[in-house]
Length: 253
Image (cartoon, rainbow, N blue to C red; front, side, top):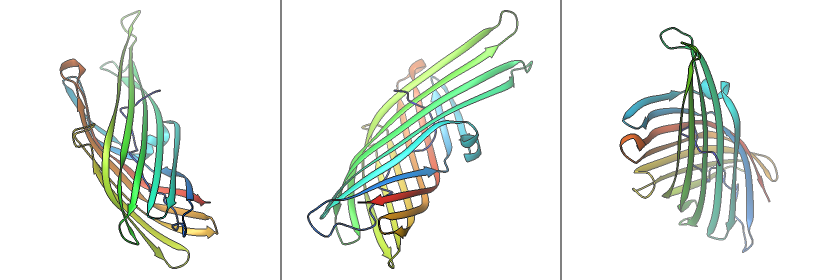
């Protein structure tokens, strides 16, 4: 499976961000499935070998060069306990010409990112949950640069693949706002040197019940990670913050 030194979400990350509109009233399970999109931008530093470079990709760049994307989440509530899972996949392909001193060189960047998270939640109070889980990152970047002169020219390629798992702990708050509205916020920290050196994540959204089992959600989500592995020519550094506005739909059953 392809990884990525990438984008967005990307996160992750992510979240119970798309939690159930209400808790189960008995010992049975209440399930919530969600699909959503994130208007992602990414900012930070990426290092390969001895070289570090700034990474600044706005939402317009992500949208223009999007190759594939999939985002979904699940939450199951049973009494004071809940389990949740979240998946974000994002693939980008960017080509650029007019490079080099002569302007005859061209380049291509392929980036893939997968963030998958599984959490357990325990209800501390009526509105507040403690959260603990694992967030898996899978990153892959491929670089290709073509230099046509002098004939026959040459093509330079490079590839970086990294994956790791971060333990995460945090809190989640849920507050109904009348009969149709819902406010949810969550924050967590993780990594602790187990996977990344440190990671963090925050999300907040409001939901509007549009019919008995359907909820439209809108909000923001951001995730940051500081990961470094290897040394010398094999060193890889990924110290970024990514995220943006979020829009989705949740079904409860």
